[in-house]
Amino acid sequence: MRVRAFAKINRSLRVVATRADGYHELRTIFQSLALHDTLTFRSVRGPFELTCDDPACPTDDTNLIARAAAQMWSASGRGGAPRGIAIDLRKRIPMQAGLGGGSSDAAAALRVLAKRWRVGDTQVHAAAMSLGADVPYFLEGGTMLGLERGDLLFPLHEPRPAWVVLVLPGFGVSTREAFGWFDAASGSHAVASGRPSPPAVGRVYQGIAAEMVNDLETPVAGRHPEIARIISALRRAGATQAAMSGSGSAVFGLFSDRSAAAAAMKRLSAGSFRTLLTRTLNRQTYQRLAAT
Image (cartoon, rainbow, N blue to C red; front, side, top):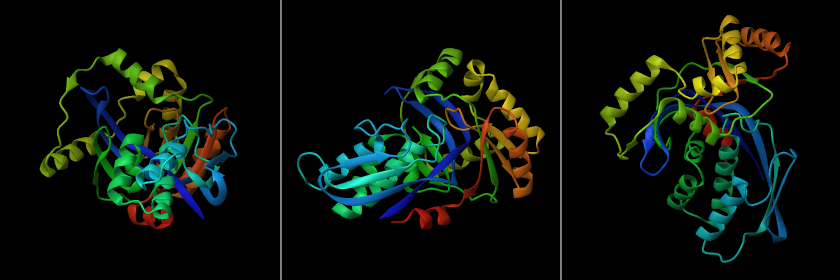
């Protein structure tokens, strides 16, 4: 069996505060992209195996795919370590780029293994939340508002499809680094975690949509000025929105047509940056293409 694990960008990312549990309170808008990794599942005799065509990607139990397999195996009532399955990962989503590759891979593994080992949806969603704040989003896809850690999700009206130019500097940024730089620059305070009512969610979305900013962008660009230069270059090339995705280091530009996006990509790839051209996916398309 072969499945796709799609990338995401954050069209907006507001860091509200540091929560009492140490996580950050977020208000973010997720958007799925057509760029994807591919996971191939094979039956084997013996213990669980994970391989990857990118040598920089770990294949031990620190990989979220391996952790997802362990959780589904346990949730199915089986003892010991997972057995009988091997996963070959074809990696195309850049790592440490704020594009959610590891979380998306984990969500894809959860979907397949839950069916294979007959694990219920409630346990799958609980496992997703324990694996990482972004993982629950990748069970849904499309355009979603994420609150609390980013894992309290609300579907949003799907915007018009857009072509996306991704620009990748020659460095990665870890999530821990980006939030640490944000905290050092701005300071934050602990807040109680509470679930907002639907009317409050609507007001939150209107406020975010009016701003469409990434609060992590300034502190990350303070350490890596290339981020700000790439954003400016994308805007000059005609992007309707240009920003850093998530905790970085990838920068995206949105374009209404493919020719404009391709021209911008060509202009930026003339420098020292790696560029990728992809497009947004709505929720219906995402769920169809990600289905097992």
